[in-house]
Structures are given as structure tokens and as C-alpha cells.
Length: 591
Image (spheres, rainbow, N blue to C red):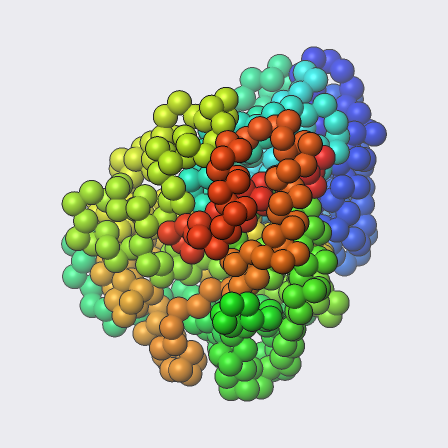
């Protein structure tokens, strides 16, 4: 796990070592164990390293193979790198290192872009080919590893974080109206390629982008899950699906133990992270390091789920760490968490993951985490109503969207308001794609491939990597997701959601964790904004920069500040926090 960046010119100008260095320095927290910069004429790569596999300098990056004429900058982990390495050695390739970085480079030479289809893992990487002069940019199937781009000065720059691109200078930081519509409507989800800034885009997941020396570009989407069901799928008994699921999940968890350093677990106390602990115990892990976090109560709402994480920690005798964060400490660290965001993200989980990662990184470098199970196995409350829906698009929007287009027009200033309901149009187009037959599967496909990427997954990457901590997500093993896509939606929605996963879990973990009410990362102080949190938001919204930007109608801001607890979204989020967070993020990035 690392941070990568680079510059590639189409106009004959040389790449700038100083700009690449500025981008790499901005990503120092992602890679505290080493750095490297390489500039060769019209292209240059930068790298920050977090040592997880092959801890020697033999695996330092950017990685150059002069014999093959390839240069690589890579962020992530290839879990099956040893198998690929053996296959490549049998084909005659020689290796100077023992890690996964060199395996990617040799695989690219051997199999070209098709090499990506053989890889199990999370990754974003750039490959320059000396023979063709081309640059290839690649992102993993679920966008677990980020990759941001900006076309500027006759070329393209790329980086693992948006703030790193801003550090290179000259980026257009005007607000993208369509992205703003998504942010305000779709609970801060901004689908690729857009970001909130007009001058920055992001490579979509499961995409290979090849850029030629003249600037011409070709994108290839190399993977997408198929939700179509055959008669065999429909007729397969529930028990068989459960056993298949457990087999795939065991494999997914086992794959993510590959490391030359210890691997722990972020244990929330929910079914998903508890199941990971149970499966690791099955694999013979003893003394497993587990970590949970809690916050102070606010307005009578509990701020931790320690009672459930304690059950699992005791049951499996883990080396458990309970981290309690007083409100004062959360307030002090909130600006740092916002600065660490590559894009503005409204979920209250962000500060939780940020502070949890700070503590975890003091004792370990790699953890497994339970993100993705709700989207893959149907755990959210908006899926069951779609089973009998006569208008899946409207029902999905009613349950998930923060506001209607009509209301948004009364909240945004006219110059920042999109001409149409962009978010609803995006969902409608995605629902219309072939490959998913019923409304539930359409929603699961959308959430797994779009919402998940630009909310939970991005949140985990940003907040863990802010402290040089690598998070791995077994529920996003692509073979596991392919299996889930074939399972009839009724099996997934049974027992209040994630039915087939819960029934599989009963063979592994205690029932009181499985049958508990569904929980979320509780940070009540940000749901009911008052006191110093209210002052922080008020200051951000009334700052000279915010007034000059003029994103929102003054009447809307006045109403929110007058009654902060009144304006709550359908997903139980604070409208005031949503608009305040955007201004806080823009200010933190110097926009």
C-alpha cells in the first residue's frame, strides 16, 4: 500500500521533477517507509512506500526493468502474486525482488493488459512502455485503490489523492455543477469520472486507460459482475448457496492474510467484521489483534457498540484494543480528518475511522475490514421495498436520496444548479443497463459498483492511509461478488437483509451478534450539531471564501443554522453537516 503520482506530456515538454516531488510529498502519510522519483524525458513517476511485502529496497519504486523497457508505479496488493510469479518464472522471467511489484511489471510484459484479469487484489498502477512511448493507468475492479487525474499544461498528471494533484499547482478548482448535484442528492456520492472540482477527474474502477504520446486515449473496462440468473441459479437450494458462500468467503479472508508483517482486524461488533475474526480463528490465527472504537453519548444516543465487539473478542480470545474518544478529542481532530479526505464525504464514520486508524497504526500495518457486505449481500433498508416495487427508480430515490431536485433548486444558488435532475438520470441509466433482471439486483449492482466505491471504500482508504495503515476488504473479493450476483435476491434479503450471509455466519460466530439490531458507526455529536461543532460549521459557512463562492442560497443556510436538528435527511444525516462539511473541505484544500 502506497501513494503514486506522475506526469506525462504530449507536447514535447519534459516532465517536471519539482511537481512530481510536490505530489509525492503531499502523500507522505500513505507511504512513510520510503520514497522515490524518476523522470525520463516526457514522463516521470513518484512513489511513497509503505513496506508490507518484500521489506527490502529491492522492491523500491518507481520500479524500472531496463531489459523489458517498462517502468512501474504501483499502489495496493496483489494477493496471488506468488502464483503469478511461479507461472512467469516457468516462462523464463527472472526476478530481482520477492514482492508483488515486480510481478505486475513482468506480467504486463508477458500478457499485456490481459494480465489484470489474472490478478486478485486491490491496485492502482501506472506503466510506461519505452517501446511505444505510451502510458497505461489501471484501477482495480472495485476502485479500492484511488487514482485521480488532471489534464493540464499539455499533458496529464495523476496521483493517489486529489490533494496531491492540487499540490502540483495550476489545477482548475472551480466547482463542477453536476458533481455538486450528486454530492447534495446522493449522500455525497460523486460517480466517476467526476469529482467536485472541474479540473480533476478519477479513473473509473475496472478500467485500463492507455494514453499514447500524442495524447490519444483508449479505455477498456475489463470486468463487471453479471446479475442475470439462470434456471440452475433459481432452483439451487438455499443450503447449497450458503455452503458455496462460506467456501468463497474463507478463500477471500485467507487471500488477505498475505503479508510480510502481521495482519489485524477492525472489529465493529457487527456480523461482517465478526465473521472475519471467526474465519481467521478457523485458519488457526491465535492472539489476533482486533480494534474497536467508541465515542461519547449525545442527546441520549449511544456512541459505541463495545458490548458486541467484546463478545467476539472474548469468544476468540483476541488481543483486543478498545479505543474510547472523548468529544473534546474528536473536535480537535475533525479538521485533520477533513484534510485527509480526497473528496468531501459526509458520513460520520470518517472521524471514527480516522481516529481508529491513528491508534491501530501504532502497533500494526495491515488490517482486514468488513466494508462491502451490505452492498454485496443486501443489508440496507432500501432493498426490501424494491422487491414489490412498481417504480424501482422512484422508490430507490425516495429511500436513498437526501433531497429532491425541486428542493435542491431552492437550496443551491442558480449559477451552481444543474439544468436537470442529474442524479436521478444517472440512476435511471444505470438501472437500464443489461445484466440485472429485477429491481433489487439493479440496486445491488448500482450500489456495489458506484455507491460503494465512492462512499465506504473511499472512506476506508482515505482514513486508514492518513496514518500509513493498509485496510483489506474480503467482502470485495471479486470472485465472492460474482457468486453473490448469482444468488437469488430473495435469499439475500431474508431475515431482514443479508439472510444467506447471516445463516452462513451461524456456523462460525455467536448468535447474539448475528441477531442484534443493525448498527452503524455511531458518532452522535455530528448528527445533532450544537456547541463547538455548530460554531465550527457556522464559521465555515460565513467565511469570506464561502460567501464569495456562493454555492448556497443565504435563506437556506440561515434556516439550517437557526434549527440544526430539524433538517435531517432520509438516511438520518444532518443537512447542516452536509453543507458545512463541503465548505470545510474546500477550505482545507485551499480552494
